[in-house]
Length: 204
Image 1 (cartoon, rainbow, N blue to C red):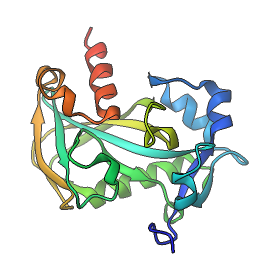
Image 2 (spheres, helix red, strand yellow):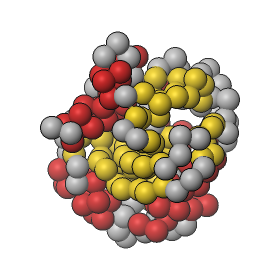
Image 3 (cartoon, helix red, strand yellow):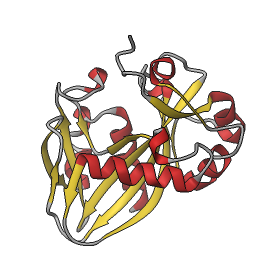
């Protein structure tokens, strides 16, 4: 039996990523990639067990970063999280997979519905929020990155009051970019390190 209990996740063929323009690192034209992926015959739902072990697919992962007054939310991934390969790493990203419950595969609305669902499952926050699709990230240097593609959403919070809904998210707090670029940088999971670099470049 699958350790993912038959979960279906949204993927795009690696060939589609290559066609739009594959890369390692970060690109700031994420919407261009999403529009190319979320079309008939491209994006599809497949069994997660297959997706996790098949580099010919890229799982689309919503990766939401929360910022308040210039500081970035970060948390430690605990052993209660589903991805053992990321335990004890420091992460900036809240979110996850897009599933059939969110709607048909070939739809931007489906994708955005999945983003909202994932965030509401993992955290609660107060005040207003403004969102932008900030970037797309890829890291083929490790086994997690080879089968995932991150779509980074930047949420600007009017209140710092945000709390986790899951035990897997520990020690949640806001840090300055300077702190995340300093001693904490070595603890960051690869996608979070890429995001810190991109946010630093945004300020230059």
